[in-house]
Image: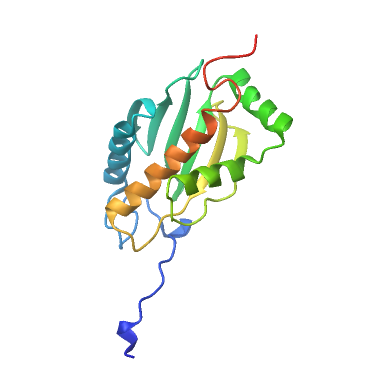
Length: 181
């Protein structure tokens, strides 16, 4: 069999191969175009409140949260991240408390949502939880996309990651808009 007949396996884009101007030579999309396409797909999903693109991120408002919270796709330092953020300490703590009480693993919950949504891309990076420099309580995972995928495939994969975060977090803590008082 000739070598050119052997199909190379798809490989994920590693963070060091991302740039702020061009996602990859294989995709050929500027980051701005990619973020705008993800924002449009997020709007069309009907799962979010207001959706906007700002500099290097797509910000999607949580539809039913009692306090402002956002699902975001962020291009930062040559990497892509999916995030849930809020400035409200109590909202973040309600999520943390539920996870401690139930013993559920948040990464597993996100992975299950990705499977339910038909995601076939590389596994998300490890989940981080912290308070950011701009004082936002943050849960985030690195997203790696297929270097050989078309722009539509990349947009679909990134949008699916946002939707998996939304499906996971909407049921946690006080995100559904109510509390037990």
